Structures are given as structure tokens and as C-alpha cells.
Length: 317
Image (cartoon, rainbow, N blue to C red; front, top):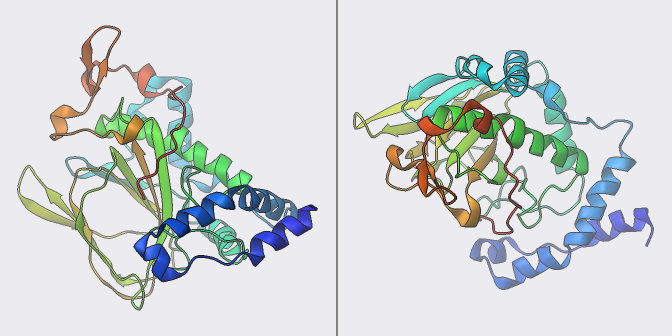
């Protein structure tokens, strides 16, 4: 089969119905699994076919101050405090910082629009099937965005940025080997809000993709502060990110005008393990020495490292 025919074959596939996807019928998984190789090859060919006018996403899209602090910390982990200083604590276990450079978001959004318009089948997160901008990002997910250049960028975000930041701010060391991600767009006539919930993650990074002049109203995010019993409300700004422990309860208010676009990525442990029982349980058992590894007992060098355990194949949804 020629490369052109691979694209044509992928684009000619008949996707499972919205109803079947919402019900998570067995035929839906069968469709994505049976066509995984075709879709992965099609995404690779799509990149080649559009190489002259398609962005290659990389970390230059991110906030310059964050880029520098991250680079310095990887070179010398003892400089990690400069990374922490960029993040503002909203409540315990919830922090916010500029993640994307607003001046480069238009380039990345153009890339994501090209992904949406590629006509290659892709799976939206279950529960937001009306939303054409919902896309699974991680290779463990059926129907994921398998474009090789995007995957290189995604892995860079997870390995070089999110994991050490989560370890530094949230103490997730030992529960962050595995990754997961998706995109979502809140829209007044489609996916308007999200009820109070916690995430099946050790850490969640939620990054706003709105352009600086792309306003919306509503869609505030409430975080429940277990230490005070109060709810704290925050609003996303262009390119801003919120990182939080998965066990922090949060909810999204209905959006009343405009649209809010976000990338959401998770970290969790092998076999879907996440910390249990609150802040004091963050850590892992070091079987070689039969002791509990806590955030206080991990070193800066350990925080700025990439796990060598294999990726598992299960996905939260």
C-alpha cells in the first residue's frame, strides 16, 4: 500500500457512532484497536505531506522564563528553586504559572486546527463526544494523536517539565511513572461545565490554550481547600497552567460566552496507582531498603530524573 493510500484508507474509515462511544460498547474499542496501525501510519504520512506548512511543536512555544528555569534545573538540580518560584500557590496542592508563551500560542493553535481538519479519525475523551476539539494525546489511549512530531513534544512536556515540577511542588515521586493526556474545549452550546470531582491521577496539569484576545465568560474553576473547608475560585488566562494533586476536589462553572480550550495531562504510578489518604501518603516504598520514600527524603537529583520503568498499556478512560 502506498503512503497516499494509507491516508485515504484512514480517512475512509467509518467511526463508531456517538451513542456507541458514550456507552463504551465493545465494538468501539475493537474499531480503534483493529485500525491502530493504519492510523499511526496515516499520522506519520500526514506530517510528511504537510512538512512545508506545518509547525514542528517544541519547547520554544513555552514561556521563556519557564524554559530557562527548567533548563538550568536539568543541568544542576540544586537550582530547582527557580522553577518553584514561578508557581503561585492557590491552595495547598494547587499552583498556577505561565506555561505557554502567549505570543506563540497562535502558532500552536494553528497546528491543532490542522490536526482537527486532518480528516484522520481520532477519539475524543469519553463524555465530550459533541466536541470536535477533544482529542486523546497519549499512546496508551485508543485513537490518540499519533503524529510523530507531536508525540516528541508531548513526551518532552511530560518528562522534562511536568514530572519534575509535580515532584517539586506536590511530592509525587514514586507515583508518576505513567502519563495520560487529552484536549478539551468548553463551549456554551456543547460541553459547558464539569461537576465537582477528583482525578484518578497523582498530579494533573491543566493548560489553557486560548489566545490573548480570545475572551470567554464563566468557566471559572473551583478548588476545595481541605485545610480550611473553603472553596477557592480561579480563572484561566492565556497560556496559564494549573497543576494540582489529583485528590483535590474541583469543578468548572458553566461557560456563558466564548470558548475555553485546554490541554489536560496526568501523571500516575504503575498499575494505575495513586497516593491515598491525603498529603502524608505521597511517597513510595523502596523495596530494596524496605523504607518509605517521601518528598522530604527524595533528593533534587531524584526529582530531576526520568523513570526507566516501561509504559503500561492501560488508560484511565
